[in-house]
Image (cartoon, rainbow, N blue to C red; front, side):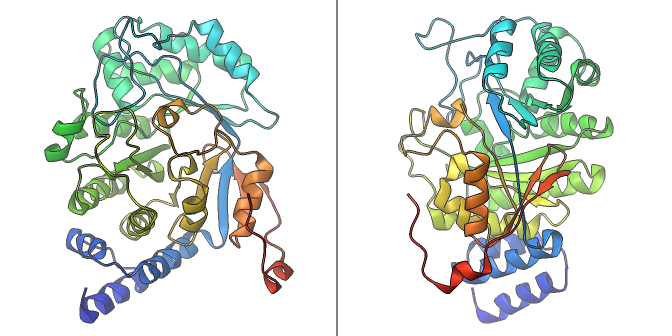
Length: 378
């Protein structure tokens, strides 16, 4: 990137002007990570100061049996596979209760597109989980792809399905199923028929019903930077319309145990660049999240200086990535782990709920700590 364009883009960012598609592509062509980070950090500071958010959550995947075969997926199994499973509702409830720590505020539920489970299984599972966990635990459940699948198996519209799920206890959809929206890429990696038109339709409906939802992007596989920019700008336009997206989550593709295992994974530098440019482009969403399970703790901590202001939560039992993870990423972090990670990076931790309402604010880093070199944590 020549110095003239660099200066032009910097002035646009500092003036709060909206960046264009061409601006986004140009930013991806720049390898000055320090400069990209400084611009993204300026934007995240304008929105969130020195706050870094996290929550106490758990993930529940009630079945890995899926009618789709997506090239990037390491989670799905077919009926009859040795490690295929489907939980009875009472089994799912017992597991959720067993892994629920004190202070749990969110249960995150994503499943395969099971070919034979009846539609009634899904609202009933939410209703039973709500009864078991109580009103203080938000049920963030189902991707737009799952809602689209429910339309097929139930004969109901997404509007009717969302109403029934909300009545059963649904607090938010998840952001998954987005992957990359561009058809050129999508037709090569996605094995189901939920594409941008239906994904956006379903989130638009959810937003109209008062749900605040996350949005995601799976990067680092066969897509090019222009596809990432297009993806973010589609979401930005929908956010202009509905205002319903609460956070954006770039998810790093993992290359173990799937059809794209021959591809190298995105490097830490590419991850930081993607976070920074996402923050710069997605000007109308308040939060950018680094899902540390998919990036590792070192990159997650560094991302806080590249536009990120949220580290997700304590997680535990995240099968979707860990079925593709041969890299030693931990299964869980405790509240104290998250506090240390955030403070060590020089930020102030804030524990939140699913709607980003602050439950508790914590003290920031000890200013004396930086006076002497600190040991590297294990």
